[in-house]
Amino acid sequence: MKTFPQLPIYTGFNRPNRMELDISDLEIEGQLPDIEGAFYRVGPDPHYPPLLGNDIYFNGDGMISMFRFEKGRVSLKTRYARTQKFLAEEKAGHPLFGAYRNPYTDDPSVEGISRSTANTNIFFHEGRLYAMKEDSLPTEMDPFTLETIGDTSFGGKVTSEAFTAHPKYDYATGEMIGFGYHAKGIGSDDVAYYVIDRHGQVVHETWFKVPYANLMHDFGVTEDYVVWPIVPVCTSLERAREGKPVFGWDSSKDVYLAVLPRRGEGKDLRLFRAPNQFCSHVMNAFNDGTKIHFDTPVARSNAFPFFPDITGAPFDREGGSARMTRWTLDLSSKDGSWEARTLSNMMGEFPKIDERYACHSYRHGYMCVMDPSLPLDPTTGRSISGLLINAWGHIDMATGVSKQWFCGPKTTLQEPVFVPRNANAPEGDGYLMGLMNVYETMSSALVILDAQHVDEGPIATIHIPTHLRSGLHGNWVPADQLTKGKASVV
Ligand code: V55
Ligand code: FE
Image (cartoon, rainbow, N blue to C red):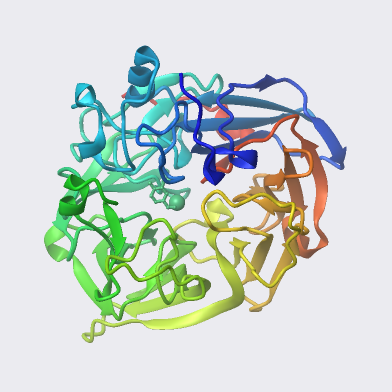
């Protein structure tokens, strides 16, 4: 095999790990809270150097980490998702798949093989663990061994070619609510919406079209409704065929919120419209009668430096800085617009909540803060995505108070998860846990904060004897759910 290119995203702290770890006991500094369960996370970790000499961060093979908390010990297991792409390339001994989401750049021998990297989210639902990439179907993993089980279409019932990496789990109903965009192939404006019950069965499906084909990365689910933000990170098949980036920012286009009742039909989709702006991840959504509240970090312009402006305009870093915002629309009103209210002055992305409150009215939100005014040591490594996370923030929606913990100038952070103190703990009573990139030692640490006192910093730091490349999303699964087992086999 050839060497990885000597580019910032493949060197230093961004060097692919490529190794699959099994460490039975990690070093624990400080007071480990009395929690039992597993913290799963996933991120791109290219198994082979990029076929075309370079690529964007979003296009590496999914490497999953599992931190298992059991009887006061913490173990770590990491495994690649052995996707169809991974297996085909491993068999060949060299890369076969080309640029991010662009099948026109692949080696012709892989036509028809799923391009999934399974690198965006690792999501647990009623005994099953899914590694997900939004251009393909989920890849099921064994929740204990992290062995790859294989791609799933939920018993053949999901006929969309793709399934989101951001499904929602409504604890009140046990449902997993998801959708697929580019549902009839890359660049299609078709969306398929699915409700999957606690037995893994598809119990509702409907299809609709969106105003323009784009990147539909996340959505919001409330007790009664489903809301998709439609933001112009647009898809162009023409650019794809020319080997150019498939996704590009189009500042001439409006933004929409598309709303369906949770068991609605595509023909009933209602579109609300607002001027051009940017959002990607959804913190949470809930409704009060016909009023829907949709919480998301909003920026004036595109926040992804690697999805270029279609006019060639340079990336606007200031315009791409997001602040947590509550968008409120009223289905009983006829005017088709919505109201916006900024929830915090902290700048950042990757919102998180106490997941027991997903789809319902909630009080506590957490996020990755990217504050360019905080000090940065020159020895701190280059960010892999162009986005540098230097604090974790907490927003109390009831008081409007924001608190943050700055990790210091020599480290950066990855997305945290909220861990409830125990199953009966009230909302927000628990911990915030996530990885810290420690450049001085080229290693990672799992840091744990008291979620009610985020500004006080870590109560425990779990040391990892190597670096773990920057990941995307993760989830905490309490031990009682983990061991409950599959409700039925699909
Ligand atoms: C995102 C991440 C992706 C992707 C599309 O966070 C959007 C946004 C890691 O892959 O393919
Ligand atoms: Fe995401």
